[in-house]
Every structure is written in C-alpha cells, then in structure tokens.
Image 1 (cartoon, helix red, strand yellow):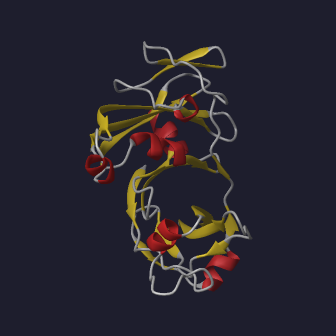
Image 2 (cartoon, rainbow, N blue to C red):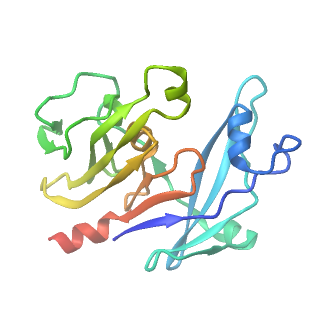
Length: 236
C-alpha cells in the first residue's frame, strides 16, 4: 500500500544548464528555479517527471528534465520511460490543499478539527506552519494529519547553520477516512538533516487515490507513495 521510491538523479535540461554544471541539484542551487514532480497514469504503474519553473527576474514556462521514469506500483521498481510513454499517459491532478488556509495556533492536545470532527496527530509536535499540519484529498474523503518528534536545531553559529545543525527525529502521517473518522493508513519514518516541515510542505495528493510524501526536498528523487484507497478498503 505504501512504497518508498528511489529514482536516479534528475539530469538538468540543456536549455537551463549553466556552463560547467551537470545536474539538476546544481541548477536549483545556482539559479532561481522552482522544481516539482509531475505524475502520469499508466496501466499497472505511474510515470514521473521533473520540471522547473524559472523565477524572477526572467520567469518563463516550465522546462522538464529529459529523464522520465516508470514506477511499478506493485513492486516499487523503477525503470526508464520513453518520450512516447510520457506523451501517451494521462496527467494526474496534484493537490496540496490544507484544512487551514491561514497560519493559526494549533491545539496542544494534538487534535485537529475538520468538518466538525476531531482527528488526532501522532508525535509530539505539529509542523511549525499550521498550513502544513494536514492535507485533504481532492474529493474530501481522506485527511492526512502530520506530526513529528525529535530535534530540529539549526545551531547557534554560522558553522552549525551551514552544516544543518542537529536535525533528526521521526515523522508521522495519519491518514483518516473523513466520513467515518477511522484510520485508513499510518505512515512513519526517520528524518535526518531535513526539517520535517519541509517534507510536509511538499506532501501532496496525486488524484484522490494516492498520497505522496517527499523524503529528499533538494533532489526530489526519494519519496513515499501510498495507495490510500486500497488501504482504506482493507481497513474496513
């Protein structure tokens, strides 16, 4: 029902690649580019690509990495996909919708209210920004509630800051069936060197069925992918 997916590093598009740099990571660090994943539906699996949105001052249309990958949803295996595969596949609708559209103080008891119902967080802390505390599916049927415990400390001097400080702990995602308030799926794992709030901020619903949690917010080549509808059916 959930698979941890690891992709090869994304090659950068030649049209955006600065001279002397050879991968997408350097492109992100060296230029004002916002990168994100694009998913498409195929029989028995899912295709994924990476695109960049050049920012100010020039701006411009999305530019894709030349790589495309095919994910087998049954096994989690990854292989290269052709340009023909990509063009023939139907794009998925991706949603990062929060139940809390404005920052607000979160309840210290670890409960979130949605549609007059209470849903519990796992872990000690809410994400720092309340808008990242939950993700609701496009049809409103499922709600992912985020929490974490551990240590997130950027450090008190420049050396600690540039080394990432001490950032380590556990992340938790509890995905509920909104109608019945029953737990459809529970997801947890370790984070190190990456603020869990960054993971939650990029989490998303891929259509109304699949939930995505990135594990590497810089390279965007590691993530957890869950079939929530399948999990909810088994939970009943």
